[in-house]
Image (tube, rainbow, N blue to C red; front, side, top):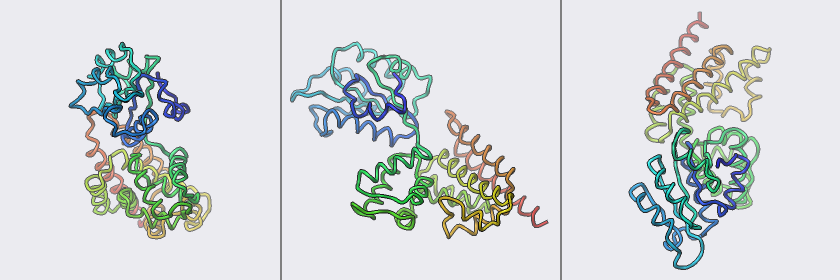
Length: 341
């Protein structure tokens, strides 16, 4: 059965109530984190060969055998399957027909909504199916605060908002940055905005920010360089690029609307939370002076369409992303020339 977002935490705290736990979605890091959490409830020692069997794609033919095996040392066993896909549907039907208390955990990133495997497990009353998608907004801020809190670290609201806006869409990358912040602050410490900037200012997401800022001021060379670095060196996805662009466009539009209502540019920019990083205030000011509110709204809609297109199976997402960046930079240059008159 499908597990609602509200019930995910309780399900992971008590995975023993299920025969199969399948985790699917776009966030591979979150899938792995939740799978680990569930497995450790059954057996804290995940390197115990008698109670835990981890099966990669090349070992999928052993799933039924491992699910029906008995623990030689007592206690419930975990069979942890990586790279789950539709081809396992028949195997899972056979597993569900067996009388066993083994917990079968399946990691299935990228499994489509019409998948036969998902349909089978969502209908089975003794199977839990959990969607794992990148968190955004308050949900992401809450997760970051929770991760830091578990390490004994507090964070100021503006620092949290700044971090969340720049966090990777992959949970594993976000957790790595949280651990870096813990090393910076120490147990019992408190993080300010300056602390967070100093600690993760060189994170991969900065490449995305570079691309967004360069595109919106019409700097094609800088935008192309930043997007290439983000995708190759930093291994960021086109979806992450689209979300970084959309976030930047929304902030520009917020300031543009404030200016249109009578505020000065500096005053409108000062009202942003989190504030514009001081090294980027010039580029932000130039962009907000070039783009009108309607043009920014149109750019936001086109960027949302880009994200949807990148999610389509088999789409040339990298090409679409680079083309979108080129279109934004070209539009920014045209509007800049028109304003100069």
